[in-house]
Amino acid sequence: MNVLKKSLVLVLFAMASLQLSLGPALAQARSLPLVRDAETEALLRSYAAPILKAAGLGSSNINIILVGDTSFNAFVVDGRRIFINIGVLMQAKTPNEVIGVLAHEAAHIAGGHLARFRDALSKAKTIAILATLLGAAAGAAGAAAGEGNVVRGGVGVVQGGTSAAQRTLLAYQRGEEAAADRAAITYLEKTKQSGRGMLETFRQFQDQQLFSARFADPYAISHPLARDRITGLERLVNNSKYRDKKDPPALQARHDLMRAKIIGFTQHPRSVARKYPSSDKSLEARYARAIAQYRNRQLRKALRNIDKLIKAQPNNPYFWELKGQALIENGRPKEAIGPYRKAVSLAPKSGLIRIALGYALVASEVPGNLGEGISHLESALSREKDSGLGYRQLAIAYGRQGKVSLADLATARGLFVSGDYKNAKRYAKRAQKKLNRGTPAWLQADDIVSYKPPKKIRR
Image (cartoon, rainbow, N blue to C red; front, top):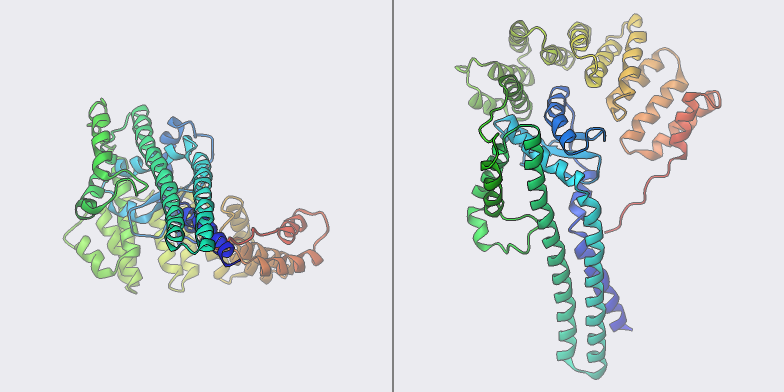
């Protein structure tokens, strides 16, 4: 009986060890520190649109999601979303470098690599399970005969089988990564863009591997070593007639502003000052410093500098948005309404900016502003369905109007998108009691009440 129990444990261990190959990516997708920013997201959509079209994904409604991690990484976990760390945007000096990363991830989606990886994972599990069963059987026979060497041999079969399965799976992943590199270059060629950005990215990885690669087993990692990827890419890039093509100056300027914004919001003010010293009079440097100033409670100075930015580019919605944000976060929502109105007029399709305007209108505590605030929030939430802030402000606004059932429904929707299904259901049931059966609001509440969350995966 003890031998059989041990065999079962070894089988489960073999399966679990292989699940780790996919597990980290799935775990990341479930509990990521996500970041939302209208300016950055708009720029990434501009980068991705031609690439997705070239990949045959132009009508697939693929979302690019920002992750609040300063390391250089991007990944996909399904066919609808590309996750990209803010570290990529902070470190990439040109749009072309980011576009190369997006092209690589788009290639994984277009190539169906995730579905095929699941098949490869299943086959690798089979190899490991068979090896485990054979090893366990040998161990059981050895134990019954009192032969310690046979028992140890059985354990060796288990370990060897699991290792072989893992190596098979990792070799498959390396092949898919190389295929994604080649496809990405094809997309760049179709969109008449250079592949040098991808090369620059992999050269950075090569620098990071100078020490560790000496001791790395190239068959025990899921990506080809940087030097191997560079060799393959250099051939493709150098043969392209677009190899020397530069990013358009206007796109580079937007990229520089985006980088400055991320650095301004994520780095300590002293670090921002070192990166963008006062002697640097560029627009992006002034942008980063203004952000750092308002974050460092130097509101008056920040507002003066934001006004100078607006004077330099009066039709830039994100400068107006920044002014509204600086004001509302310093307890001045009435003054934030004007800048946010202007930002919405300049970027009417931005749900995030419209939510901010609705927030300012509700937070102003002016009764006449509630109706307009609700209108903006409802309109924005039809596109930004995952905005907890939007639902919270909507609940406050409806509560002030005495529309308790709609306030409960908005609260339920906000709790639902945050993953608090238990309390979301509680508020949805409360809302249903006061809503007319069959109305759109009642049906929204019923969707939440009827929802069955997926079972948690036990590790």
